[in-house]
Length: 324
Image (cartoon, rainbow, N blue to C red; front, side, top):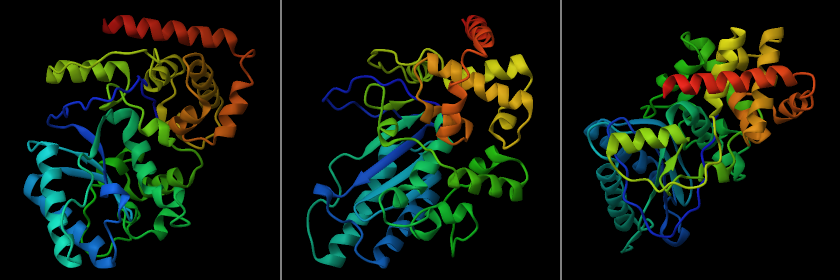
């Protein structure tokens, strides 16, 4: 998927940016890295609490994973702000934990991390990042082998209640559920995903997204966002759109396994143009659902497609001017 503008991080804490329909990647950690789940019953209780608050406050959960000492949640809020939701969940689980293990005091770090994320560029990437967490950390050989995440809900192996809102994500892979499930599995199994440093690369410590998304947040909330050095002039979706319009090839075709001439040319052009705007091959591979080695091969063809690359640059400028 797309990348964020990476700005320098200051030390002062910023107030939460909260509004209806916001997408957040939330990370809650145990105080001083202590374990917050010691037994199966602990994981089950946390999920029950999560389910209760989901019913009470009507928010969406696109992905979750519970690890020994931390939790990842990919959430969309509605009327109830994120701070109220997380306060309730954490307090209730802490009370349970302290009663069960005869402990006192704080279970979680004083301040959870919540990053406001650009949906179009990051939703799928973050679902994959979260579901691959136990594999990345050596806790499981595959995401399906780890029982305490929403991945099993996506592949139809959930026992009992399903907390995750899978349908909006699966629909991005196609309208027919069976095909969407197959495409989701393939996406998870493909090499390449967001790196940890990309997940935590934020604008003003709070926002993961491109420059336009930052401006939208500022307009919508009226909050100031500290600008910084811009890393990317155009987003990957903007580059892809320019190629789509020029070659009449859809993003779905570009991401498919098809070997058509126009699709192949489109992928090469996206890779070459993205490189000139500072994107790494890994980020382009994630966006196009390709192995990074494929993108590396595309980048070696720069001389052959030089004139067409310039045409894409011109199209990007034309599209941006239309929006001004």
